[in-house]
Image (cartoon, rainbow, N blue to C red; front, side, top):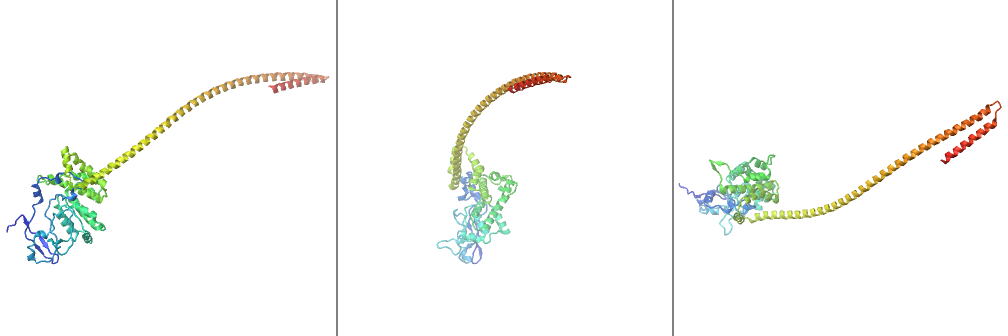
Length: 451
């Protein structure tokens, strides 16, 4: 039996009966790599990394066609159901980015030919995310509560999902899953399970195979700083397979962009980096180097006019503008403080000069006082020397005079004593001599008192 390569059959399972059948062969799109190879490179795949670029538009991804999902609809016989169009029984992968992950279950809506898709487990949600090929995801609160009842992925489910993720060579899907996990509130186990799955995907992908990047993802001591790890991701080059590069041109550029955006989202989720820090990191590692490669005005104009997601660029510009305003405000405040300090410095310098002048005046006065004191000391020494000489001379004169006076008194008394020693003592002589001595001593005492 010949099979048309452009058609395939997909399994369809009915929720009420549990029966599974294969649909009629339906046309399928050509593989994305072959379809893209026939088209010229679009701005989305050639433009440098820009903030928020991959949020609104689906990112390039290589891989297989999306797996079929369970279909909730009215129970039909297998024979009659085979004639239903296959497009009505599958969740289309080309929905707009704002489409939700699930809708209410039950019979078909009036006027609608599409059965509703049920997502009851985390595995089904992640499988659905990969079927979206990088388009924006949204998790309804009803489905979120349902999945949160048992968010754990067993080993078998994890193996199946990692095998599916291996087909996403351009890493278009994990960031969308991680962004959805950040919107989950009140169910930490579900949020942790989704983040853990994304971490497993990152650790297994070659773009994060660098030892320093692995250390950063595993929080190891030998981890690279965030800027160095992001630079290693942005500069990733795949290994050659059979002498040829496994990825070339737009696909390699898309992989680097998706990996960088995923790593930045992982930093925000696991390291708690705020928007300013992430914008500065992306600017340093991705945006600024890409901007430097624009060598002329035409290239810059092309880059400016090919930006598809204005919100991301506006957010980054708004952050940088706010930082510039804050820096300008800080600069103005610094200038004011500098002027105040200069004025205070001028006042202090004036006070210093005045103090120096006062110090010079006091120094001159001190020198004058020292000279005057030295002169007075010299004069006092001279006077003291003269007085000492005079006193010494007067003392010598006084001593000589007293000696002479005493000698005269002794001689006079000896004469009087001789008169008394005679055989016939002459008392009148002794009295006379004694009176003479007394008069002389009294006169000397008077002279000493007067002196």
